[in-house]
Image 1 (cartoon, helix red, strand yellow):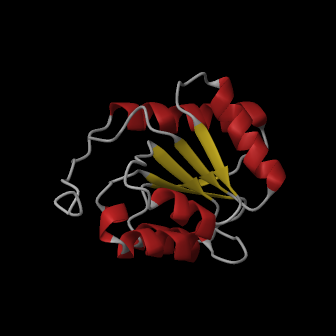
Image 2: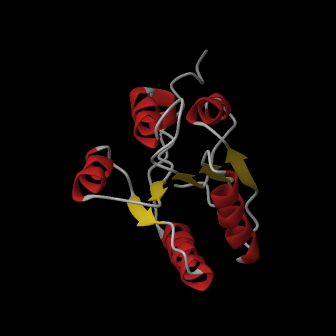
Image 3: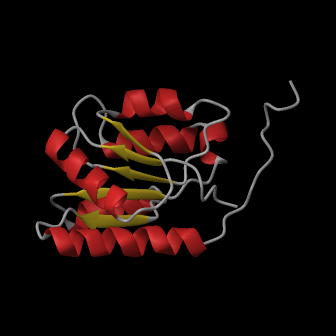
Length: 147
């Protein structure tokens, strides 16, 4: 099952967007730690830790160094990370039919716009988190645990 008490991960290169999302999630008063990263590389380093079991990942799409799509590809290519079954949500300021389709082709669990209206954005985030708090996911044994 999804680690409901694990940290909420935010990956976004824009400091303002990162802080707004963090503020919204903190304002919802979930007990989860909120951990922010400015790029996918540092997030991957963190996620690679065996004891790291996030509750949910929110990733921007358009970032330098590594796009959100490349970040998602890296998770899917790594068996240990993929088997953690962490809900993965893309969040962006702009979208096209092609970018949304690409996200779902990469097995994203959601694709949302960063809303300009703070209250609407807060309500959207609350709905997303509540959904994943009630959802079930498989727990796979760690293939490295036998070593």
